[in-house]
Image (cartoon, rainbow, N blue to C red; front, top):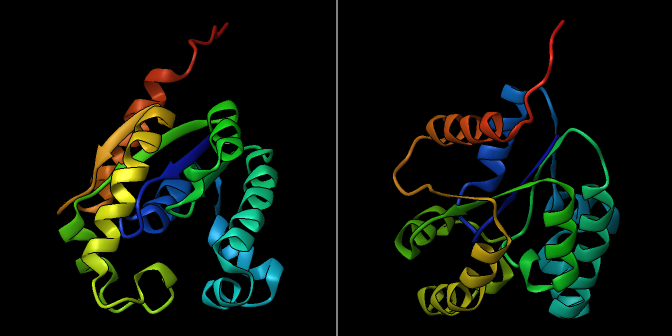
Length: 175
């Protein structure tokens, strides 16, 4: 069983992913943290030196490898769905959950986070609006389940995901 969390930055993918992995007894992975560990540096540095294209290349390799693991919960970066290959890896190798959140909630949750290169601008709202316009259709097309996370406790979101997953599991014969 694999569960892959997608959605915009600030949707709660890492927080919910950790809780979900504990509840399900699965290993937790975060593709952004994996990229940083492999590169030996942080994402802003990768963006500065290699640009977004270089980062996306690293991201695709990490998602390909991580989605081939068994029994994991994976929190992906907000832009992971931009590459067709990533969408195929996610859809073909597990249950994909889109954590949907509003621009206001994203701004609130990311306001003090300096580790988000795309938001290091004078108008982060405009950036987030442009990103969601492009990415929301991809998130929706790629997911098996869409859950709104605005003003919700992470535990409630986790419980909703678990209920969905249990309904998706094939019936087993117990003799």
